[in-house]
Image (cartoon, rainbow, N blue to C red; front, side, top):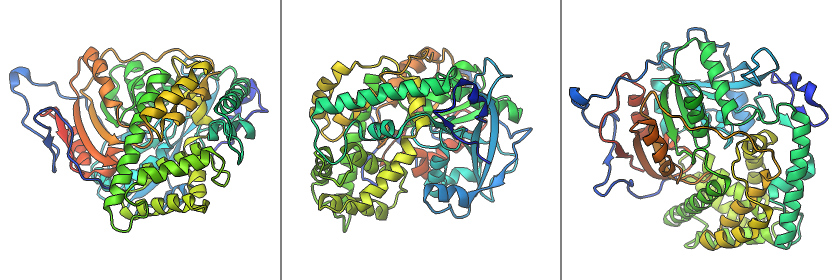
Length: 527
């Protein structure tokens, strides 16, 4: 049974009760172009013996496993999707200290979901997946299990770890309805147009109130939900399994969790796979700017792909149609749906939809219908997006990780400047900076000074949640850590390259073997 949520009425002592698409294009690479991987993923001969890369750490099956129960239907029902055919989905729970420095004190319960197929070897090492605060890791696992990337499951089971504080992992419930509404709409109220200054003030008041309430509810553990503590939950899993190393897969913001694990638990990361990573430990402004630019690019790719598909209702200028709908939301003409909620609905649908033109056509019809005054489908999508991406636990975790908060007086200028650069996403990214402005600043997460294995980077260009520019920001980190990552670029649309590309799954499978990937260091997977 899942533990009950932590509610605002409970004060510090009660914390003890908590116990949890296809787009044409070619891969980007150096001037000569990366080698395109079409299968196998081996990609080149091993280096000569004089400069041979050391063998990667051994990864293995758990010695002491968790108690797993079948949960395919329940998990699929929770997210309103069809259970993946031919895939065994199982659930388990793990008790872990809320503060790893006080392991005998309060614990919480973290939810895990495992996917495997009939052919998965029983002695195969599992891959541990975290999507951080982007979406529940269990939802990302279903996306993987339903898409081309499921071919990975024929060699390795994948175990998703839902972030502490989210709906399945000791859920937090520390905000009021007003605070949640203001966060979800980025300060916009009801069906009326609102001056930008009033919207900013309303969001800032809600953020300050939410900070006060959540700090009071969670004290003294209000700062125990950041990436370092999510990494500690992975370490608790490693200890429970009785293995020396973990094979880690970080999707989006989950890459921060993986890198925090590598920094805090030196040598325990047996494999490091970063799928469309975010900028590690970057300040709030830089992360928001990367997101604005990248999500704008993802929307443009969606519009271009839709225009090229038969029967797409967006027409030849899909970006203008999306812009009209967002403007309607901003001025109170979208049936109570704000521009922020409408954008969240669109980007979330793109993120978790399989590579199926029918899903994109359905999304396109909902956007066009909203433009004509029928907001039912888009409102339903916004409700799904809200549950996937804006829960109390996700907000608390994101605010735990914020560095370099931006002052309220700076937001109007950023809204104006970023809207000129990215008309559909700039204002939303700038306003979202206010959500964590009143939160106490946690200690910065130190980057790993060394890594036990060369990472594998899957660089998606059109991620509708975080954008696709995070991979480039990690180069300095890897140089300081003394590693040479292999980077696989993919020009498709959607969240997670691995979930959508069998080519990427082939490379990952090879990377999980007992030999280094070898050259080339820059590769590309076809769309």
